[in-house]
Length: 377
Ligand code: GLA
Image (cartoon, rainbow, N blue to C red; front, side, top):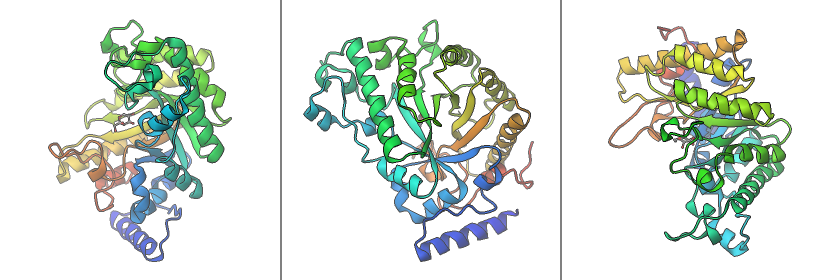
């Protein structure tokens, strides 16, 4: 496939979609989904607001088979403060799917899959979830361990049951616990102890408890994942490996989610491969869950480097599967276009993704497509 042909193809497709108002699934021959269909499901993170943009969604459904909500399935979006107070149930916070519903129903209508991201996380989880009477004031007192365990149980139950009942078959993987290992905090098992109210209130077994509850409410074919960043850092890697080995022995975890917010030169492909092998050794499926490469320059040379980086990585993932060194079953990019990437800040621009702000494929896209026009080295 040549770049020009692809651009024309995508443009025609997007124009036609706009003219006839179609947002339907249209996996072409030259899409990531099509190219890697025997290898892994290709995914992208999107915000719910993208759904109203037909051209964006035409591109999403053409290129990808899996969606992750960038934010709408995180606790701060799903928890309903007013309703929780109204209910007045000390162990059962209220959940409101108003932001996530549109994405889940889009996925269901368009036969796309979703990753459920994320259930238990120290970040983007309101402090009131942990306080007596869900008190928001500064002097609020934290609840006791037993109350918090019940809140966790009810939260996980509420979120999973709602999604699984209303959108059966859509979610194929849940990020049950996100970012629970942070060796810098000094805990012997590497548990994140700072700024982590789950740890403060429940203690280090909050991770195992979360997986225990998630197992109770998961549908049969759903994978339960641990998800983290910097998963190739050797110290962190082995702390995560110990944690997951213990969870796997109890049959509580199915997969390792490697976020993969990476740089052009770090980690090296070798270190990345080494980390994947380590997690695979536990017998876990691997998902690359939040792939992006922070590149601050938009010049041809920097973007060619990005293209090479993506080509190398996709080649690595595919080869590792072929050689049975790992079972990588999903690869998700953290965003569709550069302008909407979380890495792209007004004072510090970044151009990390596969498509530019006008939805045109960048050289990075051709890299991810393993196109010969992109040098492998
Ligand atoms: C972490 C989280 C994601 C997202 C990114 C930044 O990786 O897992 O949900 O918040 O940070 O966008």
